[in-house]
Image (cartoon, one colour):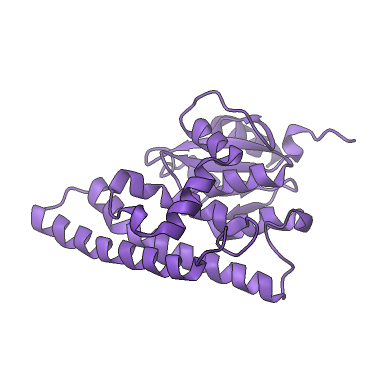
Length: 242
């Protein structure tokens, strides 16, 4: 078996604390192939000119593929990860009904569940008047409740979001769903299907690993984690290749 060189490995730029890139780490662990990580602090580093050489819009996640190409945005990265080994069942062949359904659920998670928490993050990151903050968070609370109710109905009594086995949608879900632990917008026990999914994912080895990585704690990979690389080192490599 050929052992890949560091530059031949996919490299995920993940945001801390609590970036939605968490789901991409989980997906990489489930894929089981070698990869590396690059830690990006939010909001300082992610908005820096240095990081904008990686992603001009200053957001995580971003990924450098084994071929040296860059991919930005969670959905694009997740689809790339899943397509590396269709036998893993994280995604499905494009053009099939199963793929369309996965794409639909991922899109809902991105445009509805993710977006529902945006007012709370904005309120934390900006100096607002009391009245402004209340209007913003009341709006966000209504959006979060609706997203949970919708997902609860969509999932039903299935073990995973799309049915009998885990997919990219479950990886992305856990990275966003954990935001409720900070914001305390809803009591997830009011949504028993989602609570069951959340508990199941929190016990998953890949999720435990991703939490440890974010917290800089000892982390045991259940997949193909080959270590971290500093952003400065990545930029040096890019300069040498220019």
